[in-house]
Image 1 (cartoon, rainbow, N blue to C red):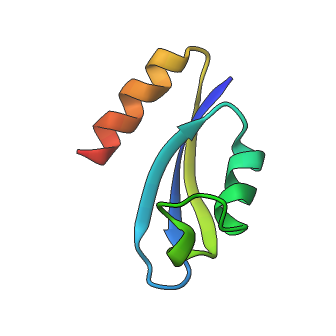
Image 2 (cartoon, rainbow, N blue to C red; image 1 turned 30 degrees about the horizontal axis):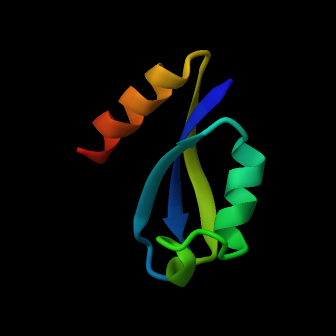
Length: 67
């Protein structure tokens, strides 16, 4: 299963959109400042997610949301 997710920074209320095959692990990585692009905006709250069977579908949806 693949997930498209939207996080909101508790620090500055900015939004981050991503996709992963392990939502809990990825959410923890963001909050533990292991992601270079979001490190300075942690902590985050998960505000939305969708699940997909195919990775290609999740990647496509992520691109749609980032536009």
